Image (cartoon, rainbow, N blue to C red):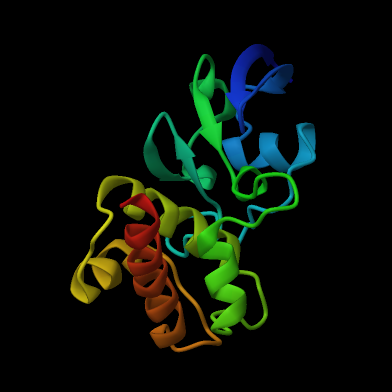
Length: 160
C-alpha cells in the first residue's frame, strides 16, 4: 500500500495527511478528516451526493483522487454554515422542506452554493440545469429548485 503526503485547505483550514494513492477525495474527507457530510451514493459521479467545491470548481469527490487535491482548496457541506449561523441556502432548504431522507441534501446544497457564487440571479432553467448532476429519489426536485430560487432572491435583497 503506497501512501502520499498531501497538504490542502479544507473549509478554510490547512490540513495535511498521508493517504493511499488510490484513495478518492471522498475517502479522504470521510475517513482521514472525519468530514462525513459528503455522501457516497454511486461511486461513479452519477448522483452528486459527494459534491464538493475544489479550487472553485464543483466536482464529485468520488471521481477525484485525494492526492490530486494536494495544494488545493476544498469546500464541503461542513464549511457552509458560519458557526451557529446557517448559510441562507441551508435555511431555505429547512423552511421550504426541500429535503426528505437527507442523503442527497449535502450535494444539492454545495452545488447550489457553487451556482449562486457564479450566478447570483439564475433562472429556473439555469438552476435545474446546474443541479442536473444531483439525483434525489424523495423530493421531486420542485422544492429544491424553489429553495435555490428563493435564496437567490433573498440574497439579492441583502447585497443591495
